[in-house]
Image (cartoon, rainbow, N blue to C red; front, side, top):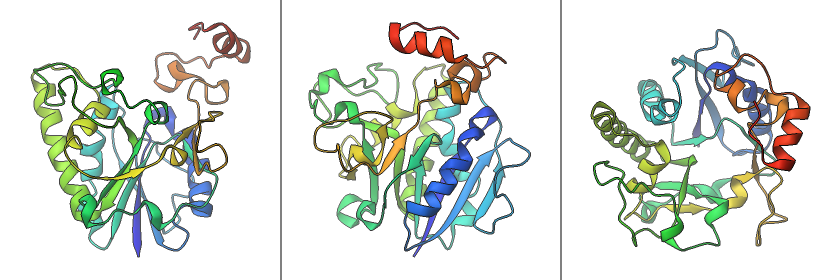
Length: 263
């Protein structure tokens, strides 16, 4: 079985790639043949000469376009997926801490697609609290009262044909909305796409925010979402290119303890 791992990291976000790759090689789909498709504007990346790593140029975009255009990025390598059985996308700032295998591979009853539910909304099933898009002019609009889950746009995958069809459809409607000047973000489109579908649900332990402990998954965390605001990575503003100065450990601590927004 061949599985393609899609990785999008432009600009300074490439700082997460090395740890992602190392932990994925150790824990992610250990019984499958993995190929990493990396979309980046960086001139060189860790292990770029490894036969299992394929690098593609994709430009650095400002937020939220950087997230919205991920489907466009994935389609740039479409011709190279011909021998890949499954494609999976994971947030760039994730690391793997325990074995992840075929249990997250969807079946026909799931439309051959799978995606993760946000940890913060796993136990809260009140869809009125979900941050769905409420703009009736946007394709991603979901009326109040509809929707069973709030999905994250940082972990999804499936059989290659169905995955690519999803990417084509979402890329198309996103570009139409962007041309109309309609603001949204990629997670809203993902939630709308799966509103009336039956994907395989990937539970929060496969995408757990760092240091979080929620009931039912305390001792079974498979993957961790690292905190982008940590001084180790320079902080949010630095990663997004809003400043060339990394956040200091002191400012990071003040933000954490007192809820400040120092950069």
